Length: 274
Ligand SMILES: Nc1ncnc2c1ncn2[C@@H]1O[C@H](COP(=O)(O)OP(=O)(O)O)[C@@H](O)[C@H]1O
Ligand SMILES: [Mg+2]
Image (tube, rainbow, N blue to C red; front, top):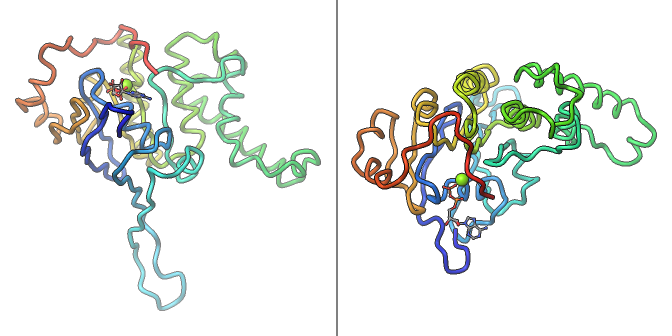
């Protein structure tokens, strides 16, 4: 990914296995958020390939071979809404909620692709529209409960305490029913108790909801506790990949963090950045 003369990412290559929690780490400015922006369609990569591999069931007719066949969906050239439709969701390094809408409304908006059925259906409130709307409301409540925000349902999102806004953002991304969720520094600015709670939630997202997680995180405790696979980015290049234990003793990785401030501990606010 180039921005004019700036080469933000160069030859970045890694895989995220289905069902895993994979962490993307690296010093500030390494290019982590840029990777997310390329995957989710916010940026159109200057070159390269990003693919979503999904299993496709074989044997739709009797006597056919059963099983699955991987099918590749190219991303990287698709606009944001089409990437979302393929089941890729995200949260942002800086919280992006509809601040003047209630917590519940934020979760309803997140599901609009399920509810929107055209002007006619909306104006005349066809049965199909009402069913979809009812299901969306039920799901909104489910996700609010999942992140422990049922009692904040009718509060304006912008007035919620910071830690609750972070959880609402997670719920908003989940309400769109992604199969892959990209979390950009979800623990930034959380205190110790909130961080522990978040770790539990992310694990449940993976285990109970079967969502693959790609996580950018500065908080090493979170990375080490959650991820099976860690990819390290520095100056737009992958300088290491492996298990958390392998990464922790990789000299190149240690070197990349030298001269950097140590990764911030819980309780500090994330820096302002787009
Ligand atoms: N839209 C953009 N225009 C120009 N430069 C950008 C843009 N987005 C990111 N960059 C640059 O790409 C580099 C990586 O940024 P970023 O992906 O935000 O790093 P990280 O998330 O690892 O801290 C930085 O030098 C940043 O200034
Ligand atoms: Mg970033």
